Image (cartoon, rainbow, N blue to C red):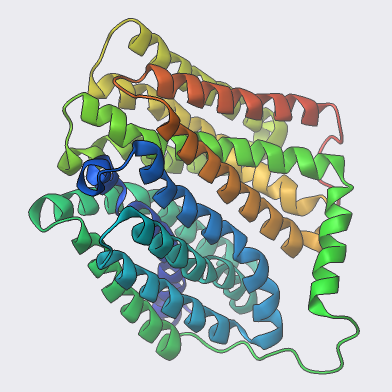
Amino acid sequence: MSSPRHGPLIANLVAQLAFGLLAMTICIPSMQEWGAIFGSTQAAVQLTFSGYVVAYGGLQLLYGPLSDRLGRKKILLRGIALGGFGSLLAAMATDLTLLTAARVLQGAGCAAGMVVGRAMVQDLFDGPQRTRVMAYIGMAMGLVPPLATILGGQLHVRVGWQANFVLVTVLSVVMFVAAWRGLPDHPARTGPQQTHWLRDMASSYARLAREPSFLLYVALLSMTTATFYAFLAGAPIVLGSYGVGPAGIGYHIMVVPLSYIVGNYLTTHLVHRVGERRVMRVGQACALLGIGLMLVLALAGVDTALALSLPLLLLGLGHGLLVPPTLIGTVGLLPALAGAAAAVAGLMQQLMGAVGGFVVGLVPHDGAVNLGWMMLALSASAAVSMALLQRTTPGPKA
């Protein structure tokens, strides 16, 4: 495959994978004011985020096997259409209940881009080219949240919170046309089917549930994701108490994703030299140190936006070192069930991320103390999972 010829294809795949993350995060700055706009509690506002995340993770379990049987493009197009409808409904919402329901539809539809996009990368590329494409995707996943929150904050201030959902609706039309015209179709599976796809899926998941190391890898990955999602959901509230409005939130949130990209880059150079487990331990230590430093500053009364964001450079760096080896371990323990393992890991990441995002709304955030304790508890749970993992198998099975 020559890069000039396949550049548009790669860009299309990256966009399809990143679209769901953009839809998830672009409205985060607006969440700071939805409680006042709709006359509701912050806990109820957080459900708009958690509802999206749960649907985004849960539907991936269905889209994967359905795309194998019915064709990749067919499932992707239906998912994009559903996500676009949810975005349009959100733009027209007049109360928080309708907005939450619309966000759930958004997440359910956008999940198709994540799982089908990854499957298409496996279908269309191999060897070093596949690694390069996945590297582009990893960079996009790190850049989208900060850029989306900056854009969302500016649209909120200049046009109104509905503008974010109007933009996502328009982009869903662009994504639909790009997928329809620019992506090759993966044919539906032909030939006799020995068992129903639901039975095959259930059998795979039951086998994974009997693997202790797999469960620990998933727990580690899920609690790490929950820590980051708690930050995403809680940072706008804390920053608001420090006088940072919607237009400036994205600039502080972006420190974690950008340092996460640096951590991923370092992982590619360190993992062959010092081993996966050592890289994971260093990453976990960096994450705990960053959260601990943020909490110490908050407890000392340093109530400034930079006291929240700058220490969390270590959190992003640590997660960049921790997550890639954890993902490799998750899908590598039982290679024959790699697809099912990836689906379970993705679901649990989003479920625990939803929990992390929701619990933030249960306590007040006049400063960073409560958010710091929550993030520290979640990250410590990840550290316990990793410590237990060290006592099991030394690494993924061949």
